[in-house]
Length: 148
Image (cartoon, rainbow, N blue to C red; front, side, top):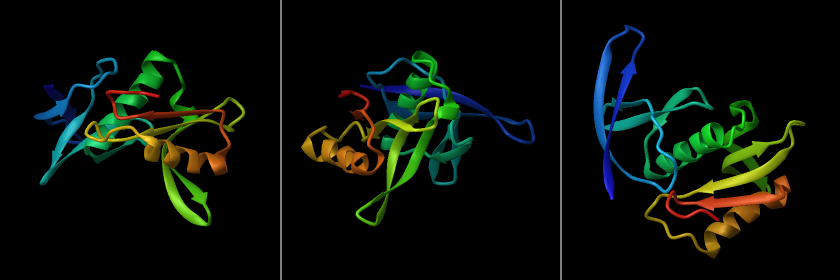
């Protein structure tokens, strides 16, 4: 199912732009986002990184899950890391979301996939590889429709 999302962005010049984009409705609480047209693609404002990023299907899931953690579960944005670099076997990789505890230690990894991606063992193993370095007690994998 697709829904039309309308968002208003107020730029530095205080001009308002209304942009409509079709995005899949996810199995997460409804949220409002700042989305803008940026040349040939769209961008969404990431409230954790405090900047606009390319709006891909995976980013749509990531932003909705971040909103869920902040708005519904009351995690402070200051305890969330987005696309955090993780060294796995001396290779740099990026964990989608890392949730930290009050002591600043990693507590949970969230691996986000596009809604079109089936959550399977490969996705779980990707999160588990990050956990070989971070050693968190909780792993979440999500494609916005299913969450484990």
